[in-house]
Image 1: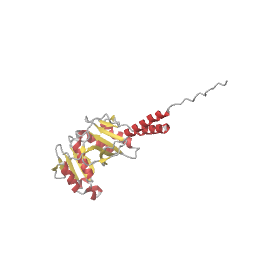
Image 2: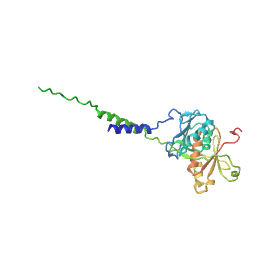
Image 3: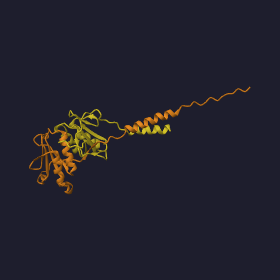
Image 4: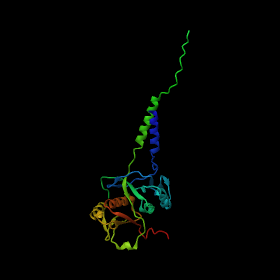
Length: 119
Length: 142
């Protein structure tokens, strides 16, 4: 009994991936027509100060393309989760989206689902 | 007289409590690994430079200006709800793939929320997004 329990504990400890992006401060944008997505192995975020975080680590915007390309190279699922603060100007996130598309990634844009439409 | 010699008992550990703790830990891990499924939308943005030949095709352009959304060639100002309706009326899924491309031009000051809602509207209407950086603002260094 205890043996099985411990095997299960070890299994859950190994499979649980802890949230790497807890320290990144951003408010996701809202839109009504969102689907539920799976979590992806590669995640990129741009926080409210415009700092780019790749896999929970700070990454200069100029290196995003090559870094993402290297990360998704050997993966079957080329989806990259993108979280950006809702008030950030396009000058800060536009280059990141461009870099992701050039790296050949499929972008999963994350937001919060709303019932009401905000203009 | 026979001395009763008791065999010393093999030491035993109370395993019952042990497995209780183990199961508590299991329950903890099961609850903490409840996968947080984010809400969003997946999209593939075709990468590449603007092909001069493609400029002849009439592709729908949506411009996100600092305070307004401009729809199409004529540049009608629309709200995000009107944009959604107009895009649905285009019946994009019935068109051939190359005619589903929608060009999105974004001003550098546009907040992400506006951009995000425009992208969601385009994707939901079945459009394929093509990004264009305003050429005079952010020209790549040669």
